[in-house]
Amino acid sequence: MKSFDKPQSDTSQATITTREGILSIFSRSPSPSTGAPGLVRRLFQLYGGLALYGISSALLVEAGLGLEPWGVLHQGLSELTGLSIGMVSIVVGAAVLVLWIPIRQRPGLGTVSNVFVIGIAMDATLALVPAPHGLGARIPLMVAGVLLNGIATGLYLAADFGPGPRDGLMTGLHRRTGRSIRLVRTAIEIAVVATGFALGGTVGAGTVLYALSIGPLAQLFLRVFAVPKASAGSTPVAGGSPEGAILRP
Image (cartoon, rainbow, N blue to C red; front, side, top):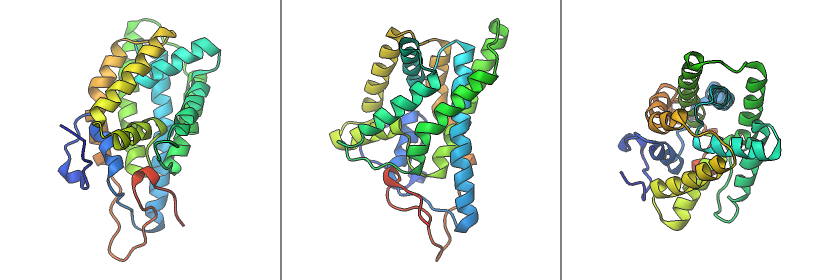
């Protein structure tokens, strides 16, 4: 989602076939777009992508055939605490963001927005979309959830406003420990899925489908939604490393 021990400086040299490959874009320099129209486009991509991510996660919940790894944990904690799954997502995102402090990760606009927008969109979708009955409705809903999640991932990552709290934790631990992103991601997500499953989170076909398809889908939509690079002499709207990318006037 190949070894990523040494982050690539040019995405054209990296073949992104799995989610670790997607995460490797956080170690490259951003490619700022030109002028105010480019900034507006990036903001639309960021918030549209985050909202769509929450919607897609809610569809997986409604399908009831297995969630993405962190969704399993969120659902398990929701069962334990009685909080809505969207609220749990916000609380977990904020808690993970605190873990950035010792590993010296710096949040960007996309990081902070990720914490709140996804959870709010999840709860809103769950309140509006009725639960389906029968596999004939649940399977298409599961497939739609995974596909929309890939589109959402491409949208908000291509906006280049910084990683989400969970992905930033992975890349930060990779940088601080020297371990590969593959190893760090696998260790974290096994722990997340196991904990969530023990608490009552749903693991199933949707979890497997997500694991197998999110990399190729996000790779495709990262290319579709790529923001044009700044032309010579233009003023970038973001700079530094994507881990610390912030909105600039």
